[in-house]
Length: 390
Image (cartoon, rainbow, N blue to C red):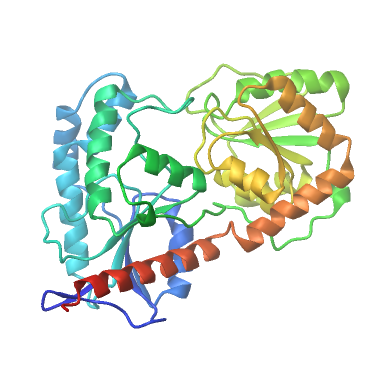
């Protein structure tokens, strides 16, 4: 919120906002690009330009095994948290124009922990909140780390003007994990990262009996389920082939089979787009996922989806009538859904069209940016009204 003489000033109705945008997440560039088109001004701030001495000290002081626990402890170490705040506040102080609000991708740290309450209004854009009780399939975290992360996030949410969730699932999970007013938690959506083919009309004759999967976390994204499913599908549909794109961060021991090919990482966007144009459907049998960007990318290419009934995938796929959601780990259920789509071109075409329409209408970064600006403007207006003396 703008502050003049210690008094918060609300923007006039319909005024385009001046935003600061703080992130250390590469995906944020897609959202920032659209915010720049719609907002009056966007000042982008990377708060992770931390000096080597601070990084080294925090790494030593937080060292523990396994590496995942150490990385978690490092991110939450007071030295790192404090330095990020200093970097962020210096960057904001250097901005010539007054900003209306700060949008932060994530909720790793409180941006103004030592600033007075009349400081800049901020919002958090998230795909999930920290819960003291982990969800099924969620990446491992130590009990101590989870408790600390929950506490730090609670402080951030306490002073945040709005929690902007990628999905309805994230909103419900946030309200269950933290004591925050429901009216403070909003669903603003998410979009594709890297590939968006929603403006194309891909001819049906370019499709092959190819089931595509893209991930870099094979266990969490259910590649073992995929291998079992592929075996069942091969018995009924010998021509069907599964293609797995990605480099597994967990190093699951996998190898090609008669109908499953692991092609490794694909960095070139046009190469990935070519696979999406060739495939007949997309398969993501994940154990746990928050807001899968890859499903939006697949839907943009008109691919029907078979995925697990978990996370934001349910509202994305079932809510858009873009495919089938199957119980986590139900391999026969995955196989039945895939075979039903392979055998029914009309169903594939219809679900693919629904998915592409959903991307054009809702699941794109322009729509996300517009919703964020609308929510922010309304929250700033309400805050200004509350701050006005009677």
